[in-house]
Image 1 (tube, protein in one colour):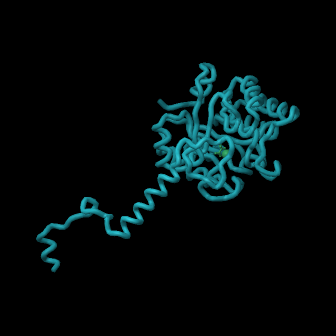
Image 2 (image 1 turned 135 degrees about the vertical axis):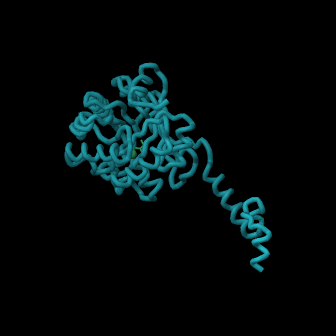
Image 3 (image 1 turned 90 degrees about the vertical axis):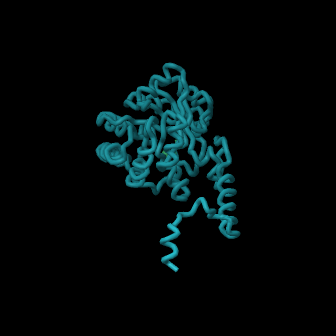
Amino acid sequence: MKNTVLTFKQSKIDGKKLTMLTAYDYSMAKIIDESGVDGILIGDSLGMVVKGEEDTLSVTVEEIIYHTKAVKRGAKNALIVADMPFLSYHVSKEQAILNAGRLVKEGGANAVKLEGGANVIEQIRGIVNAQIPVMGHLGLTPQSVNAFGGFKVQGKSEETAKKLIEDAKLIEEAGAFAIVLEGIPAKVAELITKSVSIPTIGIGAGKECDGQILVYQDMLGMFNDFIPKFVKQYANIGNVMREAINSYIMEVQNDTFPEEKHCFKIDENELNKLY
Ligand code: KIV
Ligand code: NA
């Protein structure tokens, strides 16, 4: 059954944990969707895991649309959430609505996600008024990497933790249907989760959140440039891939691939005429 924002809201009421993963293309979206996650995020993490950049800042609206279209075709049941890239919503409410609208109209997203609290409340309100569901995102928001002076855990002091709780309440009031909490102390995430009636989706935010999200390359062991503390590798698909690719190279080099069953045939009569 297709998940909607109502599924997300109801899950919190029912105390049923939500699961989300990122995806960027059709094949992976299909596998992830068939596995039964509640939501798929076309994250601007694609700047790092797909494009190989050091941060997410270079990602464009066009890139998110391109990947959202591909994911959309592969995902039948998961709620499709598309990330709003850096500077696609900071300038004005009008620009934010137009860019969110493109992710829905052109990409086929069911909802958009954007980073920030009090500083983006007008934008959240505007997008929600345009009938586009919004997911908030607080804590170690990667688009703030330069402002934070690095990818640093947020909300570790009373003052900053309070600010996170206030921001979460503002995001709920502005009409968002869920909030991602990234890279904050588990106890702070627990306080936020209890302070709002919309579900919190954690990544590096402990187990008291209403759900969890991970980047699939991280949890499948396909991205080893660095492994954040909050990542659990549920498999080492990277090694499985390397082994398979090595086998392919060896079999081509020693003439064991392709075999007869992989080959196409020509009729004997036709073949004889060739000689
Ligand atoms: O871009 C992304 O993948 C994200 C999630 C990790 C929350 O924003
Ligand atoms: Na993101």
